[in-house]
Image 1: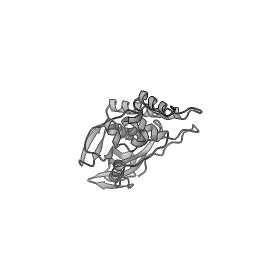
Image 2: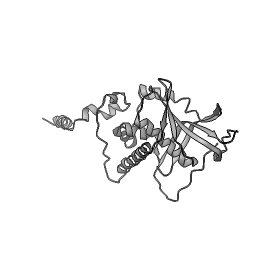
Image 3: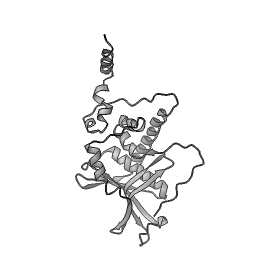
Image 4: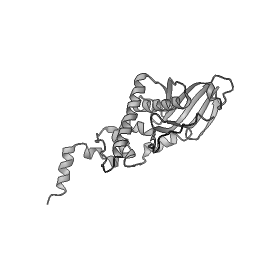
Length: 234
């Protein structure tokens, strides 16, 4: 039931791959991704806890056969080309043979990644890109094209199909490249990493890093500079 072995690169000191989940953060808010990636912040709130509960079943690694389809849970994935690693909540697989044997990787007919989300059914480009990145990893690992995946929304209990169009693939790969650039800039010796500027939105208050990011306080650079000067006034 194992995919192809991850080929060993001849290049030494290859940087650690990025966690695939950071791509969603990056497309939702670049500052949030930078706070996690560069400064290592991790905080929990009601939304992150609910998300963890929703993923509880999918995070239990294993597989089962349902209605003739093999269902992998918590499948580890990676891409050497894109420098990514992570896992899929669910991967549905169908085999050309009738046995549905997880060991017959060469006889795969199709693969479909399925991502679990806590909210109701809505379309978000960051969710679609995260799912597309999973497909790109699976294509590299298994050597078969993947045309579409799905997002299951726990609140509405509805499933939304996502087609991996050329446009979505291009957007996803560009975002991954930009994320690597962000990380690379933070690793330059002697440099002080510059976090992306905070841009306050109503959704910011639902973010687990809201109190750390302080978007309201630092969004307006002039006001921030004015408040900072007052601290040193006699």
